[in-house]
Length: 433
Image 1: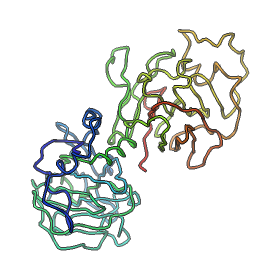
Image 2: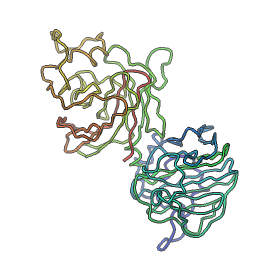
Image 3: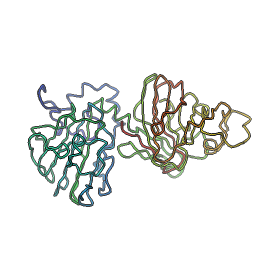
């Protein structure tokens, strides 16, 4: 399936090489038969064409939906201007990327790299063998780390296009639609990221298209955000309440939640849906946390951005609060430490004018007597990682890879990973897996 980017099929010839490959057929034709009707209708949820991360010596701009990276400095001994994708490719992935050399007076290399390759580390190092695989435009050589692979191909210069294809764990390239005779075999160590490295100041490369098959797209949906809530009041009404960037792996709140509950709050949810009774796993990292952040699963029928702190959300939403508590709706199931002494509410019915921030962060949980007090639910802060695992209708958690004893049972219905924010500037990303 062509899933992301331009639908120009000029770059879509013979996806796959080597023995056993039949007549040359465009990738769109070869993969389209694998796509079901639901996938065809989901174009609105596709990832934008973006670079995910880049070094300080790179600027990234976008014009008409086409991102371009430009080197602002020359390569030095141990650091080169580099940019990579935000979403890693899983084992067995099939993908295609088309780049254009907007300016290439120096060395430009395009390829795939594993997570073990530090961003900006020069590719041509012996210790990077079997960690980075790439084509260098200036000499037409394919390399695995510092070692050349196969026969030399055509060189590329300013104005040329380079198409990179990943399939069957091998990497092949075309320069201006002319396929190199050899491919780089035996790529290992998923997840792998499309990556570009530039050696000369002012050289620039644009990313024109990204395309994936249906299975790879499904993986991408699991490690990216799908949609965000909108602001519903004030001068910014109608604008998104959460900015999505880095190929929709990073979500940053750009709006403070109103101080009343039962309203629409800054919220983001994943692109993938987990069907009732199915298993899934995610890992997220907090990038900024000035206030409380709520991370969990919500049923797909739950309104986008509707405050979880409500009776209606009980048994529809299950989540971890960064203050150190497990919750469903406005019921706290277990918490890190007891709350300060305070009078209990006379009624379990919330009022329409309650202060949301006080109720959720410090306060009077409506079902406090049922909450278990435990030291095993640590509060979360900046750089902490939270793993959520759904299995047998039970949601378990690990903080910084330490599995917690406390779990939430009885998760039911089709669900999505979702996050709700209190403060603007707070941010959270989905990590590759």
